[in-house]
Structure formats: C-alpha cells, structure tokens
Length: 369
Image (tube, rainbow, N blue to C red):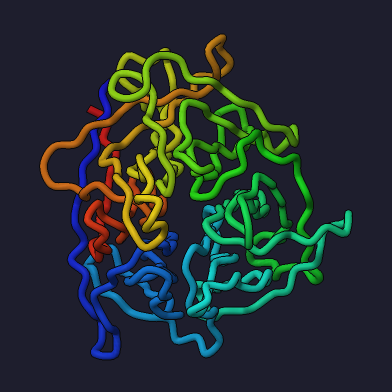
C-alpha cells in the first residue's frame, strides 16, 4: 500500500472590511475545529508581535473573520494552542510579549468555540510547590481523556525538558477551580525548544505523546521519544539506518507532528505498520550566530509518516517519507499547523530561507494509493 500527499491552497480573503489581510506571520499557532482554522499570535518582523486577534479561517471557502470576544490574550510570539478531539475548547499558554519580549504570564487562556469567548484562568503551582516556569517555543498537547500536557520550551534563560499535566475536566464540564499543574517525569535530554508533542491513540487503547526533534544549540533528530500516559513513563527509540532519504528524518526544529486517522493505512514496505501521524518541514540549520532570531536558517520541504508497528525489536515506531507531486508549500519553519479530519492537515505561514514571512494557507491530505 503506497502513501502520497496532496496539497490544496486555500484562497484567503477577508469576510468583512474590518479584517486586515494578509496574515503574514511566523512563530504563531493554530488548531482546526469544525472545518475552521483558528490562528493566533506571531510576528511579521522579528521580535514584534503582530496583534492579539484570533483569526478564524473557513477552510471551505477561505473567508477570514476574527473573534468578537471583548476579552482576549495579549499579542505574543512563541505561544502554543491545543484542543482535544471532539472538544469545543481551545487552550492557549505562554509566549513572549511587548518590545522587550518578556515572558507572558503563567495563566491559561481558554476559548469557547461555540460562545466565541475567551476566559483567563490562573493556574496554581504544583503539589510539590514548584512553580511552572513561564516559557515560549514550548508545546501543548490535549488528549481525548481531558488532560492537557505542557512540555519543554525556552524560559528566561536556557531551555526546558519538563512535562506537566493539567486535568481540564473535559467538555462540556467547566474547568475545575482551582487549576493545578501536576509534575510528570521529565523527558530524556537534551532540554530543548521548538519541539513537538503529538498525542496518538494507539490500536491497543494506549495514549502516547510522541516527540521528535527540537533545538538544543543545534537541531535534534535520530531518536523518537514518547510518553506513555497510563504508565507515566518515557521510552525512547534510536532510529536505525541513515539520516535522510531512504532512512529516517533529518534533524529539525520548529516543525510539526500532527495526528492523522487512516484506519488500516500502511506505509509502503512496512511491517504491517499503521500510519498515526504526519511530520512536516522545519529548520535544518540555524540562522547565522551573529543574526540569531533576527535571521533565518535553512528549512526542509518534506513530509514523513509516523508509523506504529506494535512491539518489535527495533521499536514500536518508525518513519516513512511521503512524496507529493505538483503544487505544495515551500520549505519553511516557525509555521503553524493543525490536524483536521481523517488524513488532512492545515499549514499556515512561517519563515522562508530568505527571512520572509509567508501568508499562505494549505490543506494537505494523505492519500492511500
């Protein structure tokens, strides 16, 4: 069974005169709910947050509107959004704000899709008395069981490898008060920013959070780490073969790893493996040291299926590269992406090799041929 990837460009246009386009930005985040992409945050120029609007893209016709909520989060970069499957709620945490790029508060922002309303929730320190550090370029993952997980990122100095969980109560039950982060075992090193944490529901009934890549002074790769939620433990898989084409994905950061549902779909030549997620793009080499965040690195223009094999000697997960023909997104990193229904994903914006921000939006669909 062969897999392919097809891309369709979404023709973005303002739904009303008060919506300002283009949506050119990087270091932002998005989730997809009910055929709409919800986009927040980012920068058009380095270290200058664009605005505090929540943009809503109708993926059927490309019309763009904004939330009418009177209360809204501050404009910020390096934030994270997450939403559980079948949920009516979007969560926002962290980022940097203002001209000084100071860390945003440790509050959790909660957006109701049906009510079109933001709420700001304070979160207590964990039961050990340790405050969860404010951070940016971290990851947030929501599971169907009603848990929200916070991982890694960049605090005021250095990088993080911690993992924290928060019980949200699920929909439609309101978030419990007070909210409290529960510390979980930290991930295998090195500590990093710009990584991913993909919630995957396995055929066995297990839920795992899969990580690949990130930045720790250099781009990371060659190892899949995953957190087994029920076992409360991390496991790691050192990938075999050669890095790159025909082997495993090259090292990367500021990329995407998104859950997809393709029942029975197998990667070509796989050992009866099931495709459970799709990895896209990312930075393959950092910007010149003298430019730092003001510059651009070099980026991938590739896609890889994460394949679940069950328990086997070489590890329960592996990657298979997926090709596409024709039009598709250019190489990029620092973009926003979200999983849609079935084998579909949505990609928006990001940074190019020439240090320009993209404003395009694409729907990718994994096809079984």
